[in-house]
Length: 201
Image (cartoon, rainbow, N blue to C red; front, side):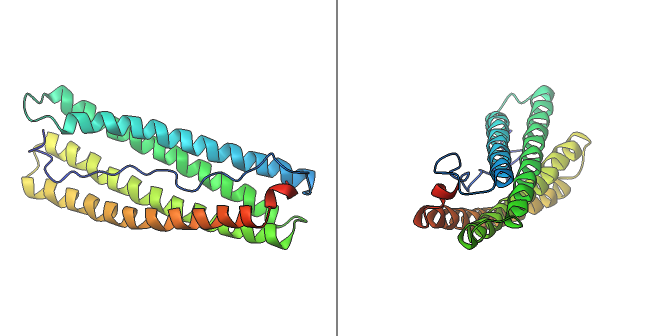
């Protein structure tokens, strides 16, 4: 199958910024803010689980793509199904990250310290980068699935190559965004630790 999908070089997004260190400290935040923090933390864990599930589907997909011979129609159909499953998982993670962002922004409007507001701003920036990363990966998967569909329908090789090139370009952008998301997430967690914000939770 490798020959038929020669330009495939899929990368699956990883949730890059860790969840805030909630649940420790003396409780200096309003109770409503603490509840929102717990909700945000839960959404972050849910997003990570969705990404892990998608990665599992993607790894199974890679095994099929790597086959050199004896590729069946069933293999092609399974490859498409696994890609669609991975895409669905990333869409689930995207929704969870947006919900996490909403919870954090709600906290910013409450009576919390300026340092905590700064942390939230940094965390939201990292979450937005993660969402951009997921969006790029999802778009790339759309092209990957489309290339399989058109291959099955007898499309010309040029058309398949065109779709794959579009996916490859999006994946390059995704890798660049991954580095940015990782750096932003680390900056947010370093600030959280440096300012001792766990004591406010």
